[in-house]
Amino acid sequence: KRHLISAADLSRDDAVLILDTAEELARLADRPIKKLPTLRGRTVVNLFFEDSTRTRISFEAAAKRLSADVINFSAKGSSVSKGESLKDTALTLEAMGADAVVIRHHASGAPHRLATSGWINGAVVNAGDGTHEHPTQALLDAFTMRRHLSGEGPGVGQDLAGRRITIVGDVLHSRVARSNVHLLATLGAEVTLVAPPTLVPFGVESWPCEISYDLDAVIGKTDAVMMLRVQRERMNAAFFPTEREYARRYGLDGDRMARMPEHAIVMHPGPMNRGMEITAEVADSDRCTAVEQVANGVSIRMAVLYLLLGGNESAVAADRTEES
Ligand code: CP
Image (cartoon, rainbow, N blue to C red; front, side, top):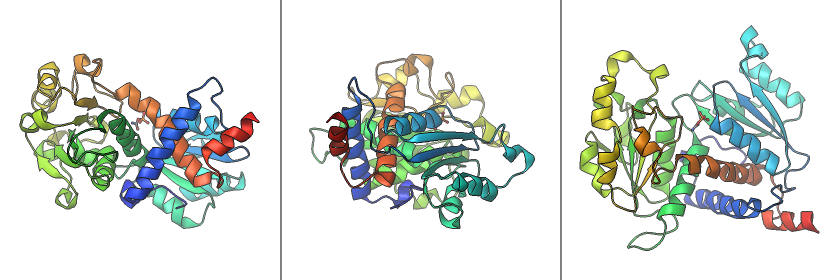
């Protein structure tokens, strides 16, 4: 495939290849010489129309560790503020020879438009579009879960088959939730969404998951609980309970965490609203993988860029060439 637009597009084989490649690249990068020559001479453009800390920086780190040239474009401070369109922005990047465009956009569907428009020839990677999808976030989340949860047990394997994952909170506005539900289902996990009734999206019945409105009913039998950020900037205030009521019914505090199985982990894609969906006690606990997820994001994004742009040789072969 030439683009990564949606986690729902990934077959099980696609997903496992990305996860396994990320493991291999993480192993190779975890040495004094961190840089691999694999994408030397290629140009990756980070095209961000919406704010980001983790995704933008980790795509930049991933491209640089593969020796690609990186151009960072932020809509703020660019000619987008003068009214320049996505098409003209894309044509400008194409003129500069982009081999891959990593795009974050407030409009759902913008990466798909870029990939199918013919405006650019390079690979398009969705770094989050509106409330639609954030596929590399779901991949790094699956990578993190696989590291913690794969292993012994009936029905449990490297692909998370049989694992019970609970995703909690503002599902309505969450591209992270949608991408995770599709990817985790592809990998054989059993996903339950927990949300206030007003923060469940229309059509969720067709998603491959269960829906619950009661966090306490599922917390005791989950292998991982993923807390979603409450997206106040996209919120209609009428749909939201008070902050105190939200935290009481759908937030994760120390008491609730203590009712999780001993092996279960707490995840958060970031940025966090401490005191809303997650208390500082939980966010800073050993069971919370939020910082580890960020580190794993670099490996996943290296794997995605490598598989979309890399040569036919394996990362290991390229690495040996560099050392010889
Ligand atoms: N998780 C995530 O997408 O974070 P950023 O918005 O900081 O990129």
